[in-house]
Length: 595
Image (cartoon, rainbow, N blue to C red; front, top):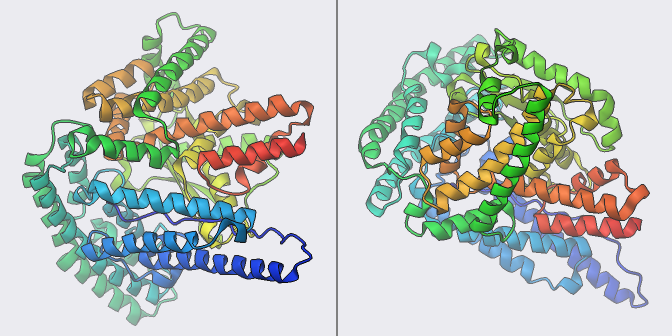
């Protein structure tokens, strides 16, 4: 299991104690509430110590020199004890002793503890490395000096060297675990292994000018003394040449020979021991629902058919006379939709999209974040296999939220989906949702970093539908881009469940996607391999979006003239991430209060 576990963020907003003639009872209730708050705060603090990377990501620098071995038996037991102990602690409080919001906190913490404890059944530790999600990629981002690991003081530079000691230990354990995986039937598909190899090989070099981990030395602050600069340069050079590069070479040699030879020819987790139950667990984890794989598969087929009919209308609007499949090819290869020569032009286009929609933002959103925002090109070391993504800013606002977009070849970069992509990954998608959650002073530390994929990704996909309200999608190709991105998420419901429960091959999933969307074959291949690497995660987008659209339609119908879209968005965003069932209850209560 990948032990970079999500921290639970629990609301601790206290509702006023009900006035009662029995003042002693009120005092006892207040004391109990305070005790419950203490438990929640301890849960948060202990979680940061267990996973110091989460603290660093949030801008908490207390543990920047630490990195436990997430794959060790000792760490596994610590995490099990952590969830078990806090589940027992919160359940020692009777609901009658807690405020309404704290009862909700208790429900959320129980849900989170249960889903994480259940995950230990499925031996994810035996496949600790893939091309998309695992620790070696996180460390690469931190090592670049352009992520959340700070490199501003001499102590910062020393902290990173100490943290690398923990990473080197993890690398050894990763190889050991993969060997155990070979013995017990837990191995990656060959098609994923070959995508990891270039990532590892790039870091076997001992040429400092070319090594990613040397980047912080290239950017030593001018305020450092010459003596400190010399010491750090020597220390980083020695660390890379004597430890980091050899460790990467050892891991690359193992994965390119022994492990690749044992890699699976199959694509889905149903071929792993207990794979069917594992996939059911992943569905629940990522959608926060009890839907079955079959239900999701059928829903996906219906959504694909619906969106295809809308695509046909756009095809007719632009005057294209061929069938929809040839129209996909036409859009993919249309040189008019590839206008840029340099990555800088691609970045500039995203900033222009932002400027275009700014006049309409205030109408749809009362709540807007103050955290700064930037668009950046994805780092070269992971660009070939990366998707566009959003990295949150720090809790204190010192680091901006960053929308990363891969641009391996600017001359082949197709812009037809850029407006929808910006709405999803940037504004008002992930940047608004995550930044508002982090900035909300009414929320305690728990809730500021909580993440549920169905809520967070569902919100971002819902935001793609706001384009016309925000003054975008005036170009039919950009509207087609929105439909294409929605289709992409609908297809995920079909192919993710197909791969992991219906025996679909990688090639079969690629073929289905090519028939139903306008993405390039290279992009689709990368996406299919992403679903193979993290079963179930891709389901969360569409499941969450459909729930938000359902809740908005319900509010519009029941409130009529009293419906205010900005207030609806406030209700969705103001309390941060939560499982979908709890969000539905919140919106239902809001509707009732307005009526």
